[in-house]
Image 1 (cartoon, rainbow, N blue to C red):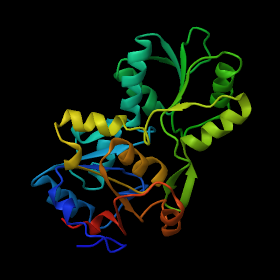
Image 2: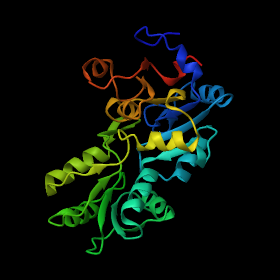
Image 3: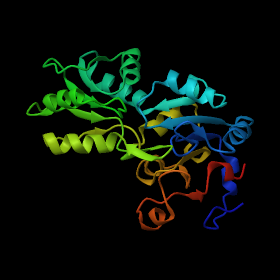
Length: 268
């Protein structure tokens, strides 16, 4: 079978580990795309699927509940998120030292569950600042974050650089857009942890003892999903069900291995 540009995609059938982005790739907000469950069932017969999402607004437990409500067979082992990547990185760098966090209640709970010591109040004892995608964002949170960053020199991290998050009517600002506003207010730009960094993909391959050649990353954003696959040296599929457009594919320096209208069109 060929992809949207006529490229033979039969090698997809040999993959063992399928890493799926979520927003815009398998669903839009609360609506599962057609054919997703059938595809996951076919994959599970001979391989494994993992959801690797930059969206840090929900904990893994919350994501499991969300997908199960949509009828997707999923448990905590099916996920690796930018929040989990942040926990690994910050524990390595700062141990149990205090970290200031801007994010949702679910995000904060997940960080604490992962062993980080965090606060949402401006605190001079904090050794770093971490910002996640926050649909619960308030003026008070922004003020505290800017206070922590202004003139402090504290290390500044963010879960992901995505500019927008798809919703049922279009898009809302994601973590990258929120951090752009913080940068304009403080002059501080964060180090982004999630995709396009290769860390999430490499962790998944190590965990399941799968080679780069046996791994496929699927997503709807060129500058995060596909770039992460390129950085991890694995094959990629860009789907046109989310953010990326045909024009983006023609003008971007980041090129996927294959392009399909949706994940349901994969040759499996």
